[in-house]
Amino acid sequence: MNPPFSFEVEKDGKEFHAWCPEFPGCHTHGKTVHAALENLKDAIQLYLDTMMEEEIAKQTARALDETA
Image (cartoon, rainbow, N blue to C red; front, side, top):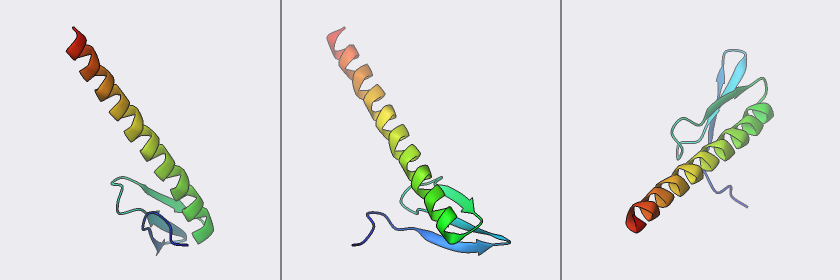
């Protein structure tokens, strides 16, 4: 099964740098590839949660403007 998003991992000194090109700002590090990917999962979840909250806030503001 393919992951729903692409990701990149590269050696960065003594750690590994992982990021998801589809989500700007989703970059993380870990001492191992596994740790970097686990951290990336958390970063993606936070990114999606934030995007969802921002979209809900926009829709709520729009709905309030329409009823005012």
